[in-house]
Amino acid sequence: MKPIQVGLLGAGTVGSGTFKVLLRNQEEIKRRAGRGIEITMVADLDAARAREVAGEGVKVVADAREVIANPDIDIVIELIGGYGIARQLVLEAIAAGKHVVTANKALLAVHGTEIFAAAHAKGVMVAFEAAVAGGIPIIKALREGLTANSIQWLAGIINGTTNFILSEMRDKGLDFATVLKEAQRLGYAEADPTFDIEGVDAGHKVTLMSAIAFGIPVQFDKAHIEGITKLAAQDIKYAEQLGYRIKLLGITKRTAQGIELRVHPSLVPSKRLLANVEGAMNAVVVHGDAVGTTLYYGKGAGSEPTASAVIADLVDITRLHTADAAHRVPHLAFHPDAMSDLKVLPMAEVVTSYYLRLRVADQAGVLAKVTGLLATAGISIDAVLQREADEVGGEGSTQTDLIILTHDAREGTVNDVLAELQALPTVLQPIVRIRKEELS
Ligand code: HSE
Image (cartoon, rainbow, N blue to C red; front, side, top):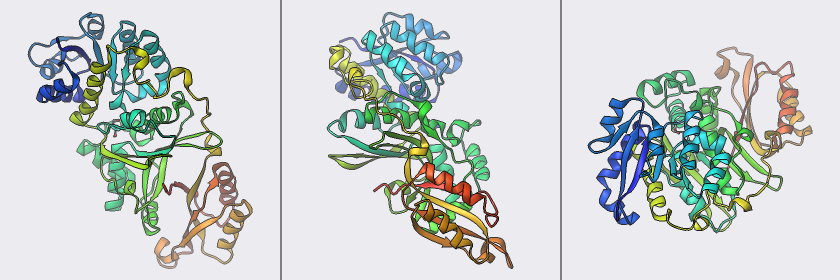
């Protein structure tokens, strides 16, 4: 049978890896897919780069619309990124009856509802394994492997840049700004790292996983997002002394009240596997009612790891494109007419536990006052650590750090009590609050 023909939009790092892996493993891929898969056309504004990536016999064009207009192309791979022109091109490719493979988490997390509806109406597939956690087949696992389960929660380290920075901060005791500069020098962080360090990239990915896990529409605008820019080396050290590591987690949970959807730094018990995922690696823990807890680990970015996911989608589409559209795996795991309207909870309604650090005056009654206010608010304390004043502020210091771990509490209640604590004259600096996940 004639190979299925693929057009590639964007000949960057992942595009180059896709060419390499397709070529290197072409025989095995063909035996799996049932027919050959060939990229026959590439569009990139940088013609020289595209030419170098594509090799002999591949048509290189500057205008992506030439690829979409080519009737011989069955599948379009979108590796341009962003929500701008990429959205337009993906919608045009769908309208032209092409299947689409994309690594674009931002596009799907924000415009997924529109894009999946257009694909459904046209009877084409939009595949996005590469959009979440690079080479880890987490979309496949959630959408198919765990399909028997009522998924209860998932939590993931889904941004390699921030995990690298946090690992370095912990290992070397350095502050955020110093490690960020080093990460940029080594190429682990982009020149503009905003999306990574502010948690936006992880927010896009957890939004997609949440939709698939619970059968809800993609709702990035409802996700609570905090990055790692305000984390102090001091808190990483205190957390360690209490038996925890700090990780940037993407978390989504099913509760009786609705769905939690959030990204923020979290204390994780050091003994958990997730706490020991170091450097730029990614990992996702998924808890299903039947299977229990499962863990997926691997490279979340990079040329060939991401190409591995792109090609898996090409193989899936090659196998399924002649199947009746109604018998394919639905984009978001649940059939479009069977989606849930469970609401995404505002952060104030989320229930979790907390690490609090208060810089306080080292004098009689301060601890009693602080714990008294927590008790009045119904917040139960799990552990307290108080440093010697000399250790915190130098010899003769009259200040110290008071670190409190709480049991589960409602975020809105915690916000109220933190405002009261902050107003105490003996609380000398802004209180540090980091959420804590036991993941048990
Ligand atoms: N910038 C991402 C990361 C990879 O650092 O994990 C692509 O989403």
